[in-house]
Image (cartoon, rainbow, N blue to C red):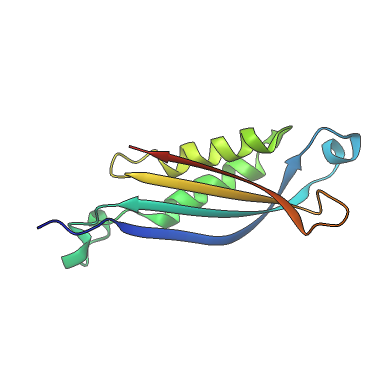
Length: 120
Protein backbone atom coordinates (compact mmCIF):
# COMPACT_ATOMS: atom_id res chain seq x y z
CA UNK A 1 0.00 0.00 0.00
CA UNK A 2 1.45 3.37 -0.95
CA UNK A 3 1.85 6.16 1.56
CA UNK A 4 0.44 9.65 1.05
CA UNK A 5 2.96 12.15 -0.29
CA UNK A 6 5.48 13.79 2.00
CA UNK A 7 5.22 17.57 2.31
CA UNK A 8 8.13 19.97 2.38
CA UNK A 9 7.32 23.46 3.65
CA UNK A 10 9.74 26.34 3.27
CA UNK A 11 8.38 28.88 5.74
CA UNK A 12 8.85 32.65 5.78
CA UNK A 13 11.88 32.92 3.50
CA UNK A 14 12.68 36.63 3.81
CA UNK A 15 14.26 38.18 0.73
CA UNK A 16 14.71 41.58 -0.91
CA UNK A 17 14.04 42.28 -4.56
CA UNK A 18 12.85 44.90 -7.00
CA UNK A 19 9.07 44.46 -7.24
CA UNK A 20 6.52 46.94 -8.56
CA UNK A 21 5.82 49.57 -11.18
CA UNK A 22 6.15 52.85 -9.25
CA UNK A 23 9.39 54.82 -9.61
CA UNK A 24 10.27 54.26 -5.95
CA UNK A 25 9.72 50.49 -6.34
CA UNK A 26 11.91 50.33 -9.44
CA UNK A 27 14.71 52.22 -7.64
CA UNK A 28 14.66 50.37 -4.29
CA UNK A 29 14.59 46.75 -3.21
CA UNK A 30 11.60 45.72 -1.12
CA UNK A 31 11.02 42.94 1.37
CA UNK A 32 9.10 39.88 0.28
CA UNK A 33 8.24 36.77 2.28
CA UNK A 34 8.10 33.49 0.39
CA UNK A 35 6.26 30.36 1.54
CA UNK A 36 6.50 27.19 -0.51
CA UNK A 37 4.82 23.82 -0.11
CA UNK A 38 6.02 20.86 -2.17
CA UNK A 39 4.55 17.35 -2.17
CA UNK A 40 6.41 14.28 -3.39
CA UNK A 41 6.15 10.53 -2.73
CA UNK A 42 9.40 10.19 -0.70
CA UNK A 43 9.11 6.39 -1.02
CA UNK A 44 12.88 5.85 -1.06
CA UNK A 45 13.72 8.51 1.53
CA UNK A 46 11.35 7.05 4.14
CA UNK A 47 13.75 4.17 4.79
CA UNK A 48 17.06 5.68 3.75
CA UNK A 49 19.79 7.98 4.99
CA UNK A 50 20.96 8.80 1.43
CA UNK A 51 20.36 12.41 0.32
CA UNK A 52 19.96 11.15 -3.25
CA UNK A 53 16.74 9.39 -2.19
CA UNK A 54 15.18 12.67 -1.03
CA UNK A 55 14.09 15.87 -2.70
CA UNK A 56 16.82 18.36 -1.80
CA UNK A 57 15.04 21.39 -0.35
CA UNK A 58 18.34 23.23 0.11
CA UNK A 59 18.95 23.20 -3.67
CA UNK A 60 15.38 24.35 -4.36
CA UNK A 61 15.69 27.17 -1.81
CA UNK A 62 19.04 28.34 -3.24
CA UNK A 63 17.49 28.48 -6.73
CA UNK A 64 14.56 30.52 -5.41
CA UNK A 65 16.86 32.95 -3.57
CA UNK A 66 19.11 33.41 -6.60
CA UNK A 67 16.15 34.02 -8.93
CA UNK A 68 14.42 36.53 -6.65
CA UNK A 69 17.53 38.48 -5.68
CA UNK A 70 19.04 38.59 -9.19
CA UNK A 71 15.95 39.80 -11.08
CA UNK A 72 13.45 42.65 -11.24
CA UNK A 73 9.70 42.14 -11.31
CA UNK A 74 6.84 44.49 -12.19
CA UNK A 75 4.08 42.12 -11.14
CA UNK A 76 3.63 39.93 -8.08
CA UNK A 77 1.92 37.41 -10.38
CA UNK A 78 5.06 36.95 -12.49
CA UNK A 79 7.29 36.62 -9.43
CA UNK A 80 4.94 34.03 -7.91
CA UNK A 81 4.73 32.00 -11.13
CA UNK A 82 8.53 32.02 -11.49
CA UNK A 83 8.98 30.66 -7.97
CA UNK A 84 6.25 28.07 -8.57
CA UNK A 85 8.13 26.92 -11.69
CA UNK A 86 11.28 26.44 -9.60
CA UNK A 87 9.35 24.59 -6.86
CA UNK A 88 7.81 22.12 -9.31
CA UNK A 89 10.73 21.47 -11.65
CA UNK A 90 11.89 18.15 -10.15
CA UNK A 91 10.08 15.21 -11.77
CA UNK A 92 9.18 13.73 -8.36
CA UNK A 93 7.01 16.72 -7.42
CA UNK A 94 3.27 15.98 -7.51
CA UNK A 95 2.00 19.31 -6.12
CA UNK A 96 3.50 22.71 -5.39
CA UNK A 97 2.07 25.88 -3.89
CA UNK A 98 3.74 29.26 -3.50
CA UNK A 99 2.60 32.30 -1.54
CA UNK A 100 4.58 35.52 -1.74
CA UNK A 101 3.86 38.50 0.49
CA UNK A 102 4.88 41.97 -0.64
CA UNK A 103 5.30 43.80 2.66
CA UNK A 104 3.81 47.28 3.15
CA UNK A 105 2.19 47.25 -0.32
CA UNK A 106 -0.91 48.93 1.09
CA UNK A 107 -1.04 51.69 3.68
CA UNK A 108 -3.13 49.92 6.34
CA UNK A 109 -2.16 46.30 5.64
CA UNK A 110 0.88 44.29 6.71
CA UNK A 111 1.23 42.92 3.20
CA UNK A 112 -0.45 41.86 -0.01
CA UNK A 113 0.10 38.25 -1.01
CA UNK A 114 -0.30 36.20 -4.14
CA UNK A 115 -0.80 32.42 -4.05
CA UNK A 116 -0.49 30.03 -6.98
CA UNK A 117 -0.46 26.25 -7.11
CA UNK A 118 0.28 23.45 -9.57
CA UNK A 119 -0.64 19.78 -9.61
CA UNK A 120 0.82 16.98 -11.75
